[in-house]
Every structure is written in C-alpha cells, then in structure tokens.
Length: 190
Length: 114
Image 1 (tube, each protein chain N blue to C red):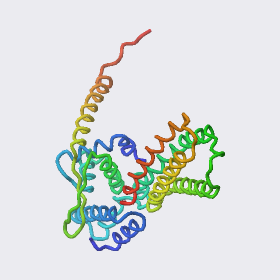
Image 2 (image 1 turned 180 degrees about the vertical axis):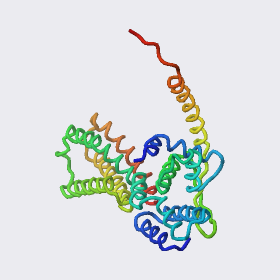
Image 3 (image 1 turned 30 degrees about the horizontal axis):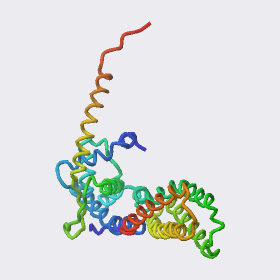
Image 4 (image 1 turned 30 degrees about the vertical axis):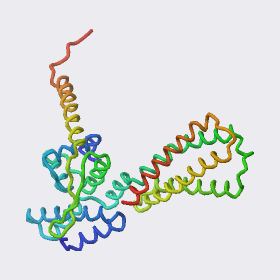
C-alpha cells in the first residue's frame, strides 16, 4: 500500500465495518487512485486526501455494502413473506384443531420461542447499518430450516388428516427450507 | 444527491456492464471508465461502485476473479454470456427510447389547436 497514514486510517476504518475481501478490493482501488493523483503531480499527503475523498465517507460505503449484503436481502425476503406463512400455518393449525394433537407443551414452547428469536434477529438484520450484523441472518436461516422441518414432521406425525390450508402451507415451507438452506452458505461466505 | 448521480439511478447497472464490454477490468478502472466516458458527469463516490459490481456478480451478469498485482490482491470482473445478452438487449432498448425522445424534443413547434 501507499503507506500514508491517511490511507491506512481510512482502510482501518473500513476494516472495522466490512469483510476482509471487500476491504482488500477497496484497498487496491484506493492505491490506484492514490497513484493516479501522484502522477498528476500532487504531493503525497494531498494525493492521499484526494484518493480517500474520491472513495467517499466510510459510512456511505458501508451503507452501500449493507444494502447489497446477502444477509440483509435474505432477511427482507423472509420478513416480507412471513405474514403469508403465518396465515397459511395459522389456518392449517386451526382447521386441523391442532390444540387436540398430542404434542408436549415444552416442545410447543421451544418452537414458539425459537420462532420469536428468528423473527427478532431478521428484524435486527434488516434494520442494522452494520455489515457484520447482517451475517446473523445465516444462523437465523438455519433455525428457520429447523422450524419448518419440525412443523412438517409434527403435521406428518400428529395431524389426523390433511386439510386444504396444509396443502398450501406444506409446499410453501418446503420451498422456504430450500431457499434458506441455499442462502446460509452465501451469507456466511461474505 | 447530485443531479448526475440522480440521473444515474436505474442506469448504473447497464453502464457498468458497458464499461466491461471491452474486456476484464478492476473496480477502479470501471469507475474511471464511467467518469471518462461521460465527460466527467458520472463521477460516483468510488467506494459505492463496488457493491453495485457485487450485485451484478450475484445476478450472474459479471464474474469476478482475484489476482496479485504489485503485492496487492486485485479483483477483476468480466462479462458473462448472460451479461453480454443483457447489455445487447439494454442497448437496443436505449436506442429505441432515445430515438423516440429525440423525435419529440427536436421536432418543430406543435401546431396550435383551438
């Protein structure tokens, strides 16, 4: 790198906010910009200042990266589709009189608590300006796969018959399992 | 937001694809190509170009790869076949749109109706 304190501080600020690969890519571009300003005859400090100014405020850059973060996009998608799933499964459970099923109370409580944790995590990810926090969507997606799987297993084992809302809810959950399972590695890879 | 940046909204993706039409480039070179190609009008905060490139990469329109240049890690991008098709389609749409707008803006005065 150029080794100028201004550039080093700027990159350190970005490194606190963004994944290492993104910082490496930005560092390469910043060096290109710095060298270009030097070739135009600017002194070292002015060239470093011009290069960092050209790249923009680290806060602005972070926001741009956060908007594109796979975790945030997954969280927004899952939150947007959440009410549809709630309606489908709500209708399924009511139509099948799920309160008469032989499901231990503890298991239901754990399911409900986990669902709340997942929803809260997705809301945090969707609203957070912090890139690292968007990776929380990875574990949340993992838990969602388990929750959907648990719901499908419960229906298979405890429901006396298939109702029409279940005929919609089950494939919807299968699709969500596929989406969430495919998304987790993408989120965690960043 | 500067008027130029506002005007870019909705067109940035295709402009980034066009900047790669001549062959693989790294992020800063792509940004410079946009600035120079627009006569300095499209001078984005450089740091915000990279997330847009990542979005295009996730969409399968460009592909990135790492190399080592002067001891630094550099990520360069090239158009994928899908990206080339997208660019060709967007170019055709743009020409058609521009022709229609030009036809209206550069036409003589409209006849007065009573």
